[in-house]
Length: 451
Image (cartoon, rainbow, N blue to C red; front, side, top):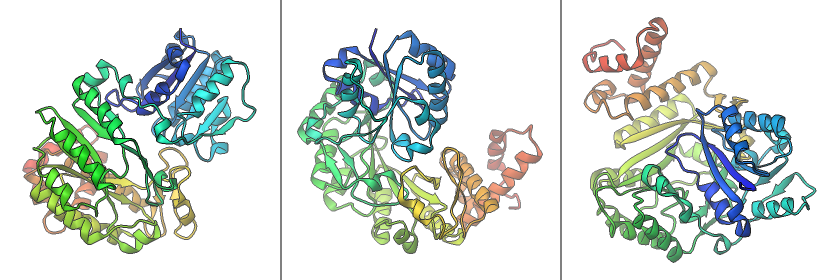
């Protein structure tokens, strides 16, 4: 039986926890006594506790995130009722800030904030040797990246066959966008590229074909980005799929030449636009050349086969409905394959909190801490925009209405789709027995509906 269990609750089975594998890879002499156990949101907390107790661990390290905080809190409360002798150590972004306000922190024995690669194994050694640290909240030590063991050998054959493989060539971010936890980083740190690519080659040889890079700024270092793209170009086959998050206004010709060589279905870019309003960008400390961003997006759509996923955020300080509508219409005109409309969230520790009073930012006190109202957008309007985002995802991002959608949007995409969203909401409220899917199917033959 393992002395240490590393656990987390994933959103879906398809997601494999990179964080747990990093911890396991860096356990040193304790690695043979360490086991990874992953669960999903649909699992009952009582069933998760049953599985954890069956492993008979002395220590449980639990990864806590915004999407699993409520379930994780129930899990720790149950653990402490039925097996109080088991030591529970928390880590992850959700418990790395504002610890004193969280029930789960009060329930657990220890919390490691920030980086855990070195600090968690050290704590486990002390606990097993009966020399525990005095403090409950431990600030994670940030080692040099060369001192961290890479985790990729810990992806199992089942992971490789059935799950998305998360990888990172760098950590951190040099930018200071205030809605993002990465704004707290001092810079971006790159792993040794030769070692990293050697690990990618081993994953590929084992059959991995789905690679999702979690780097916040993949195209920050063009030389490194080019080598990574060249690595995958040399291994192209009909199953390869690589996902990157890119800086939207930084796409030099050297990268464009490589990007253009990828065939359809092999490359996806997540492009954070967030807002086209320069005043709002300045408020949230976001540096972005809007004209270069638009030019790069249009090049990706016209000159490459990359799947382009672009993000906008609803509810940023200083942005009213008219400003958001202009940005949305501009992005629709550029025509990325997907437009993700995210509702602003107040992630714990992010500096966006400094705008709370000046812009009357009112957030949901419960996860996911979404914005409910601002001085520019009242609560009923924010509700409309939340539905707008939901229906856009179901209708536009689904890809099911490629012919119908342009006819519905016409020359005023935001106004027309907001009206469509209001109509759909009214229909589903008045006619509960009609499923949304049925309504969406009717869109193909209902283009004359008065919106």
